[in-house]
Each structure stands twice: as structure tokens, then as C-alpha cells.
Length: 66
Image (cartoon, rainbow, N blue to C red):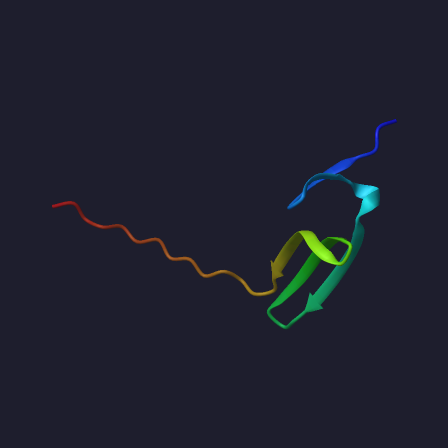
């Protein structure tokens, strides 16, 4: 079976050659999940996912045509 690759700033690399770390941040207004892949201490890929704990306000407006 082929070893999986992941796209990084150094090109496609084998997942097993990278260090993978996750971090969670809990705040009153959001929760943040951070995935970090490093190669020899250098960050080569990072993803951040944020969940807002507050509702989003949106208002629709229509402009009249003259």
C-alpha cells in the first residue's frame, strides 16, 4: 500500500515524515482548532477552524432603481 502524501509549503510530503500537533483555544465568543504539521521544526502546513459562539447579525436592504 502506498504511503499517503500531504500538500505542504515544501511540496507533497509523506505524512509519516512530519510532526502533527493540534491546539484548541476556548474563548467566550469562539472556539478555535489549529492543526500544525512541521518538518525539522519548520511549519510546513497549518489549518485553523473557528466556531463562533455568538449569532451572526445580517440585514437585507434593497436599493430602489430610479
